Image (tube, rainbow, N blue to C red; front, side, top):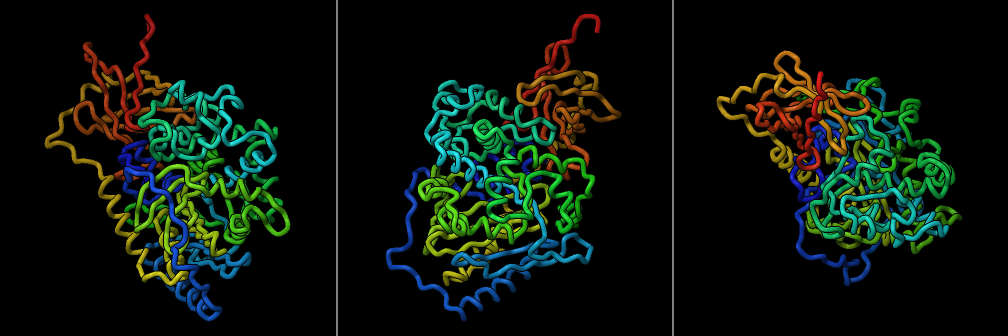
Length: 533
């Protein structure tokens, strides 16, 4: 399964969360480069010729054949793809089925969750308000959101509006993200940022975040008096004619033509049931990943990007701010021959013959890729109903076909990448023989963490049960070696995705703290019991 493209180890954050979230993440594993290299424009040899109508016809036919073969090879039940060129849709097609084992085919109207490609919508809303002089990119966040705090007071004072969406905060990758699965609301998730200790200097390294996009949405809400959901509907969906798109779980549930979410279980692709208890989480993180759409609606979004902030006769975003959104802010690293930079809800990749602007996204069972080339007026969107690297592979394949780059089997390369990541994420084997745990009542009790609140540990047969968050989510801890356990949440955690848990034992022989491998090593300290209890 894919992981974040930072150099942080896969254990940064709950293992079950990194697996399920896959698409609020940027999927490529990028090797960090020590120098901030300036992105280069198109090659100096001059602009490559546009494909002729006959050449374009062949490119699309070859691409469609490749896409279907790759879909079947990767066991993706269904996907939809659309391509825009010169402000018109030149390709829109569904592949496969909406639900594994069923016959209802995906078409260009089928709704999918678009995951982290929602971030660019939040950035666009911010640009609209910057155009409206509500705030500026270089304004300090605390001058607009008085309660905004990070762990370091100096960083709090210096944190600018553009830093909210530039992925260079210094926080650990995916800081606090598991709160969404536990049912914490957006206000609490923003508040909890003050308790997350930084792991790098401010603005020095790329590290993928979702919580800071919630703060960006809070800024929008302050100056519009409307929710993020209402803003995206009124300022983007409606005027762009994205009538099938929505922001929220209800929109997905009420869609008559929607793709089921899938994941692999015991080597078999299965659909998540409509009553799966964790469908809500992605919408708690709405500004970072909570939009539902289809490829036809997303072509209108692509046309806005390619139109330099203009769609049809309306300039939604000034050209200057549209360019700002797509301008590199922090080096991510290099992979597949190009340097990659995070912008504002977009990624800039230096490629031949032109830079590629893109972002991917994923939820619990849908995966998305949106990519475009401003200089060539061409873009692609891929929506799918299984978490794989296929959407990225198809976008890169189309880029190479269109610009007549050397032939490369991107699906094969991405498959190899997935295998490499899976190997890196494998849990270690316990020692032989493992040491038995202490009597389980030595671990039970109430524990507290500033970010995740109270954790109640109780004993049940030969396991421990940790109850967490407003949703009272239960994680089962099974013994691994003495005071070390592996945690799993029923219906959410699959084999190999367990959370590492460890107890620190005090001088009285009882656990004093519980450590979970969330945000690095998240410590819950035991709450002292009151006398008489």
